[in-house]
Image (cartoon, rainbow, N blue to C red; front, side):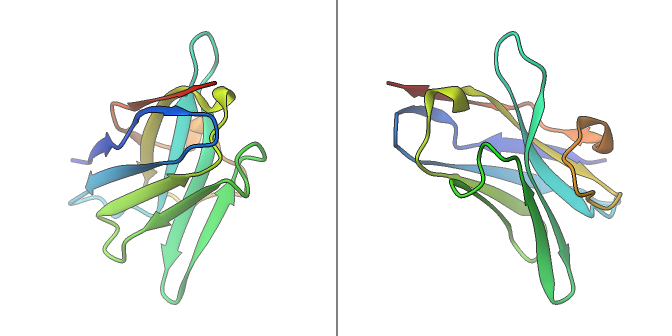
Amino acid sequence: QVQLVESGGGSVQVGGSLRLSCAASTVPVTVNCMGWFRQAPGKEREGVATIYSYTGGRSTRYHDSVRGRFTISQDNAKNKMYLQMNSLKPEDTALYYCAADDGLCRDGIYVMDFGYWGQGTQVTVSS
């Protein structure tokens, strides 16, 4: 059974930084693609970033709105995933979810591609 637990959310001012963590317990599933999603009040859940680790490297994808500001990373054992968020904006305010799947990451970031989800951690950016 896959369990994903997010942490690291909080309140920060515009321009500030936060680092989200996702602790993953995935045995016996072999997780291949992991990602971060977010959902603001009244809006649909949207993909933020994904990461696929393979022998010799990693492949990452980012939503256009966060590219250059956010960095997704993962430890080698895939037990932890992180989202470093810099230069935060009010529009980054949302509930952030960790997600995982045994399928491969696609070029796009789609909710439908992920079968496992955490409970979310709130990020609030105030001006």
